[in-house]
Image 1: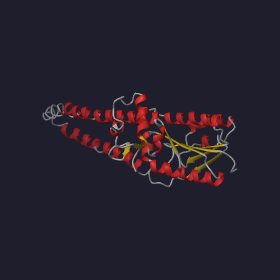
Image 2: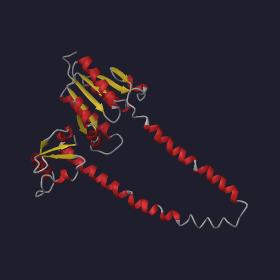
Image 3: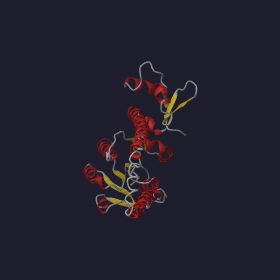
Image 4: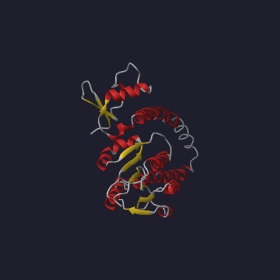
Length: 279
């Protein structure tokens, strides 16, 4: 089957990186190549896993929309486009999500042979039957360990104050005089406490959201930046100015220097190249 054209598509927020690597190694072993390799993710994932994506030769398809299934929709739309334009013989979908059932059926109608890879323990019974071939792969990483620990902590904290409150009620029931004294004390505390918390919380959240939107807008206009390679700064700035993301008279470095956590320029003095991420 080495003469078959293979497309390898990854639902990046649905499976662990070690499962993705196992799946790609299996594809190499069975078909000899993966001609099209794409990982569908958001900007934060693309930056965080930049080294992993480059090592496996996966092209990051950055999803800019915000929503529960926005990445799934981006994958489905691109997969249909590939089926029509590139016409791969084999489409490999790495995901445990059962929502892709209609997509798998539609791609098969286009003449592709569908193979799926899912993460063991996350794949539902209905997912396996829709593919021509499906493999479940074990997740070897220890990433899921902290998740249950975080869920248990709030449960213990919630249980601690409840018995304390119950003991205080029967003890003070016999003495009616001291009851009015604690009542006025807690009354002024609640209005004072929430006021500073509410004022401090929205500021960083709004700032982070605005920054993320601006970074996503740049990557939407310049998708090649998501590959983590160096690109011509002048050409990038020209595209940004034409799109209205950068003022006509603004220096070419202005928007990229505004987000040093996402973009890097070189050389330090009079830079002429830009890339997404660091290292």
